[in-house]
Amino acid sequence: MFDNLSEKLQRVFKNLRGEGRLTAANMEAALKEIRMALLEADVHFRVVKQLIENVRQKALGEEVLTALAPAQQVVKIVRDELVSVLGSQQAKLRFSNDPPSGVFIVGLQGSGKTTTAGKLARWLQRNGHSPLMVSVDVYRPAARQQLSVIGREVKLPVYEGTAEEKLPAELARAARREAANSGRDVLLVDTAGRLHIDEELMLELAQLKALLNPVEILFVADAMTGQDAVRSADEFHKRLGITGVILTKMDGDARGGAALSIRSVTGQPIKFVGVGEKSDALEPFLPERVASRILGMGDVLSLIEKVEEEIDEKQATETARRLLEDEFTLEDFRDHIRQLRKLGPLESILSMMPQVGFLKDLKNVQVDEKQITRVVAIIDSMTPRERAHHGLINGSRRRRIARGSGTTVQEVNLVLRQYAQMRKMMRNLTGGFMGKRLGKLKLSGILEQRI
Image (tube, rainbow, N blue to C red; front, side, top):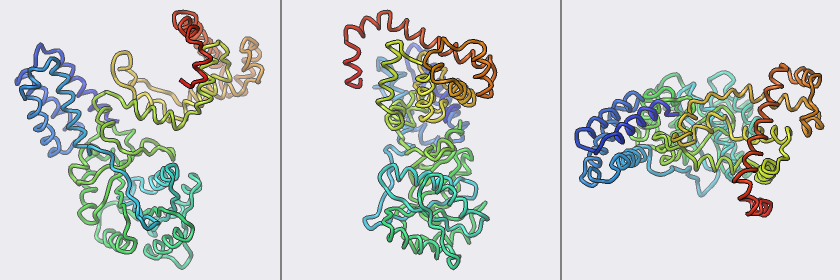
């Protein structure tokens, strides 16, 4: 996300660092480039105008112009202004003191409301809540069945209604009663959408709002539609009073105009972003971290949190020990790949790394997820003895493994080569300076302390 904008802003800052000193003239030139970068990223023109004016006032002050590293000061100012535009602090979900808390999912048809309802339900469950979902979309064919399918996928309940409950208000009222009776503390209401905003839709949503008095009305917007998403969010807020926004398809949005505009235009915060198709691909929106990613500083904190949440600590520690002690087998190699895949698409993980030094080209790395699947299939097709002792794998065994995994002998050879290179690299690492240092520090004792 934000790839195009990030690349252009980094080029501006690089040019500033190349200047002998910062002057009003070269600062104005930089501001002009920043303005163009933001407009080309489809950021709302009023947002761009205000951001540039704020940066100008702060960057042309005496304190910045005479600083030892003025270019770095400018980067900090731009980052602070981006954080301000994005919302300064994380906007958390609100909950009622009298459960169940009603949360409406609203938006135009095709924005991803139903899928987002499932993702949000999964996120709520993982954060200590017990949600019940209901679809009140009685117009779109199979809309309610779609939510039921998603409910089964995330293993969470969906109120499907009875034959007598045919109106949105009837379904909503019965679902609230079911949530209260079953001890569910959140009722997620997936509402109907239209291809455009119309009076009938808004009247229905207003009636549902009056009936359930929800604590949250979350507008779901497709980030890739840019300013169309911003205009729709603004219209929904004027007519309905939304409390927050969920931006979907953020992983495919290279510009970022909607994310940088929607809060300033509507006055309402972005609360979550969808970053993939899987049921757990929904993340809280953290303005400071997003601003850092826009400026190429990465989002290492989010990466660490994701690793802590998904990776088994004991298994990771054991893998590290086996690597350093040259006991790393093909089975360990496969398990290591499986652990990494829990973090999500590898391209998404690489995008969280700071774009500096030898890491600066990581964002351009194209990861073939199918190739990773083939590697796992190849290792799965080996016998336990072959995985433990790779030296046993001769020509005939390679042909059998290739047949069993639906791959070629050449692909089997490539996996074995990659594995051998990894072992060799670790042997060199532990046999040299690092190995001596680890010996002095008593590696086994350190590993027991879970460094």
